[in-house]
Length: 368
Ligand SMILES: *Cc1c(COP(=O)(O)O)cnc(C)c1O
Image 1 (cartoon, rainbow, N blue to C red):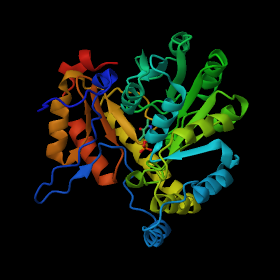
Image 2 (cartoon, rainbow, N blue to C red):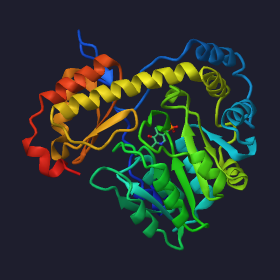
Image 3 (cartoon, rainbow, N blue to C red):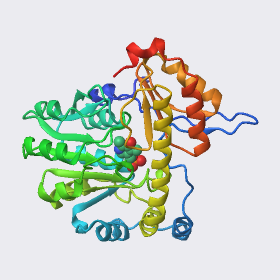
């Protein structure tokens, strides 16, 4: 019998929004172009990291160490936590998928701020859970009171993204402490610290200390941003041992490759040099922020390696002007653009584009 219709996937798949990846720049003859659309680290890998990865390549005929032994040992040593409290994955996005799979039944609720990281609604829908989005305030900050009030009997997980991608601000240590005190014990509070190394605000979050004090707090981190390993896909969770065990149980076996593990371990060994680079990126961020403010721009306080420009309905125009200038930015239709802090020359191009921008028409739609 001829059959033209393939089997149907779960209904929840229809609710999965597409992930819009930051576009690479279009090559332009005679013009240097820069990618400022994915919050990547503009620096190439440090020497020891490349050598460690190259050495690991020689064993590609073997499966990786399924226990991620070397990586867990290095992280445990660095963070001062037992290896049993760690769960690694192919990027912290993968760790989030594993975590939601481990904790959410269909129709359970996951509370997070919005706008926030676009992987959240995708990961929640893929699990079959329900997203409960709590709008960020006018300054692009988490409204933690409203998030606490949004918790119900069905809530299993709350995601706190600090600094928040794409709006930029971080929550303070005191704010997060108050929040955790309000959230019931059956709810797992996941602190997504993808950009923690770039935070220079007063009273920064000490998520590991908070995790130590509260069995329902978990911390998610990544090697993709400050550590410059976006292409290798390594992220991890620090949580109560039972939580970490559950997350490891749903993880793909052999997910993190031997090469990626070797690069991550080598990166921890050259952390001091990496943090000097982070300092330089923060310096560039401060320069860009001062320049933009001087030009009259108003935008939320950026604590990551990116700035958020709320150009509202005129987002496509800003994107086009940026492209002409040689930088690719990340558009959020109708809301604004997120621009990563890159090489100084790339940041100069952003300041050129922003400086030539006439502000009037977008203000109403763009103010947030
Ligand atoms: C980039 C980013 C991550 C990390 O993603 P990886 O999968 O580790 O590359 C996690 N959370 C947020 C908010 C991010 O912006």
